[in-house]
Amino acid sequence: MSALPAGRRAARDLLDTLGTDRRTEWRTCFSTDGSEAPTGLAPVCPDEDHEEDDGSVYACCAEPVIECGSSPVAAYLAALLNADRGAL
Image (cartoon, rainbow, N blue to C red; front, top):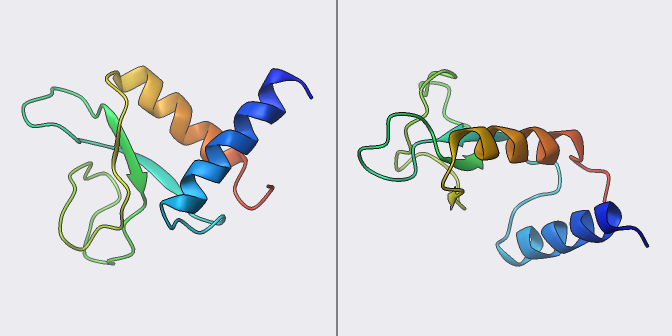
């Protein structure tokens, strides 16, 4: 098995243990106080009052919130997870 499928499987296994659905859509979010750009990722909030462009995390938002330490990395990982939704 190449590194990419193995990495996908490992990520999916971890997200399964955290209770996420395989169809979860991901977004970047502000996971630490004071950051200038969203450096984390989280499931898209299901609350219709949570504006799509608002990267904040509120009580209405689903877990997990994962800190990535970098806005570009968070955006990349959210895109990868969204591309793999339901595939594994």
